[in-house]
Image 1: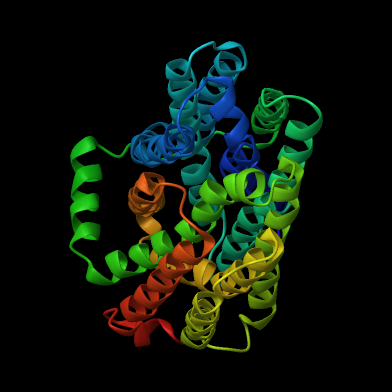
Image 2 (image 1 turned 180 degrees about the vertical axis):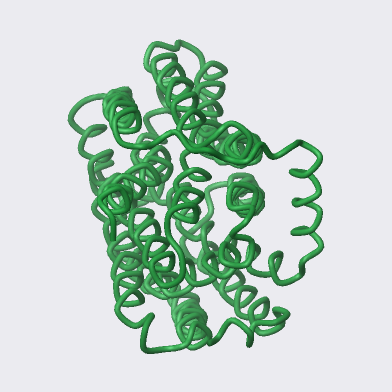
Length: 390
């Protein structure tokens, strides 16, 4: 493996990591946001939902720009947007400006997600590409381990604005590393007509759509916990925000361990076996989750979701790699469309959850059961699933 490839294996996961951290670091602040702006719980939750919607739109826009103008320039542009939005959030005095800033942060994250995967496809192939995608998935898993805990500590001992100072420093470091390491790419100038034609082809590909829906359902599992658990901690269990961060560690460790074990088994077992295991584990654990009526601590609920996330570690990278390998010639477009659809699914379910008035843990457990069963059904009936099991 060349020196540049080794540098990318370090930088790309760090670039991808900021997408999850933008949500996970902020999640413990939701009760404080509710009090600071004197808004409803639902509106506070929507400051995360609008970030996800911005994230979805950003992937579509930057997918086009990335394939047309190159990876490096679109990453730098997005980092500038991210930095401006973060500064605006730190000093904003109204929830409307907070929503605008969060939407812009999510929009910029679209570039980071698209370009991290596209650069992986550009510079790796075959088994090395699978490994690169696993590393990106590991970075996605590290965020939920570290970010909620740090966010909880910051909110408990400082203010909710302190989380955005951390994001500001992170983005500045990324700007420097991107400028220093990532090479200017010589992308073929993909026209707008070709871009939309490629999107049409993918949207008509049932296997691509089935895989993307599975990714969206898998992704939203962690988002639901981030939307509801901070309020359970403060209103139901009457504890500090740091406790939410500690409970979120369970989820992150579960996904991280699942992805890491998948990394070790990817050479020995077929893709279908690994995905099937993750799906079956999720359904089984969801049934157990539903069977519990009351929970003494937030950690008990988090433990069930952590096991579901452990299974997701086998699902996410393998399902995603199938789409990227199939459309390697249109890496930017593929990652953009896949990511956008995945996030639209996540945002839609998030809006529905936010519309629920103070949902109990037991009510949310039924949502997890529905999500895991639907993922299993989608994979069983996914066209050409057997073709990718080799």
